[in-house]
Length: 487
Image 1 (cartoon, rainbow, N blue to C red):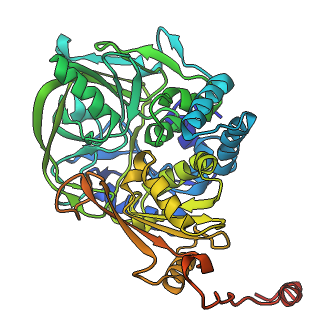
Image 2 (image 1 turned 30 degrees about the vertical axis):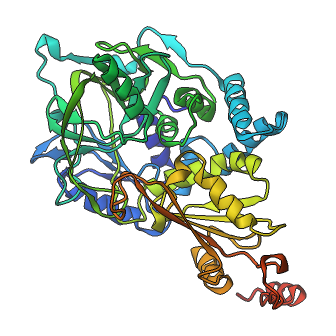
Image 3 (image 1 turned 45 degrees about the vertical axis):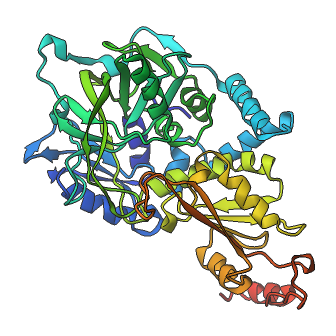
């Protein structure tokens, strides 16, 4: 299902009883964060919030603010028009089964072709709702970022941060597009930081512009169909276009319109477009910021984004999220990505049964994976294989369990970890790139990772005591008690 605007998705949440409207004024400074945080930590992710009168330094904003719109499994499924995210994973699996690939590279290539054939390529249009109001700064327009209800999230943040930006860049040599999500600290009404980390594609595009000593055109989209947000956060490999993937997710091609002041095209139906450029070599201090790690990330230098125009819908809604001590809204985005791309992992590692990134691990810190174990040291094969796959390289801890363990039940995984491992025998350490936001390593971007083999041990692995059987009730007895209706 395709949504023609963020307001359409918000309306669907409202009709489904999954939205709370706040009609009284609420400050974008800390107060919205506190209200949203309480919902995000409620059972199942709470409800989405629509602040109809957010205030900026005590003054009402003309734009309402939506937050926690993707913060539950139900809302995440509704965002892509399905009953469950697993349905989209099944569609991915069907593409791969059409012609089973022989390698991970071939799997990605097949996915790209299948996505292209199913729902296709974006369409170019001459105009769209995102241009209903146009503010070109070269003409002296006094509209600015200060007119948007951008959040000051946490008490020790370095300023206001745009937290759900979809950042459009292009490779200056190939023209290949990338859409990433990088937080943006507002410096003033027309200047922000661009927090793309060294491992990100946006940073790679930036390096090529720096080498050419040319300004880098950048466009930032806010709002629109939530499928766009999902695509921007999904760990897609190089060569699989986020806009193409968004079309596949929403079952409708994305209509693209050319920006007013930069040579980039963006979805015509988003709520806001921030146009501008990054100047090669220009860096400014960014941060601190209360991040998804649950800690403030330190001040560091990042590129500067200079705005040349802002365009938006007349009835635009400003989308926001907050990150911090988990669980938060971003957990559901990450979980959806794991569910959708699990078939790709299974194509490369057929023994994988399931995978989970628990909220406590804040994405990269902790991975649970279950396997059908057949031979010695198979768990270590899985660990090293996952560490070699894209953003899985950041996974600080990987715990491998047997197929009968529910990896979505953290308590059950920890039980297996504590019961089935000898610390010296069943652990391994490697050196690997680390997430730039991980404050634990001594040196940024590099660190050690640890794997745990919590599977049953085989005699061929040196275990000769006879592995014990897990305590379970007789199935006939269970069925009899179930029939009595007793819990």
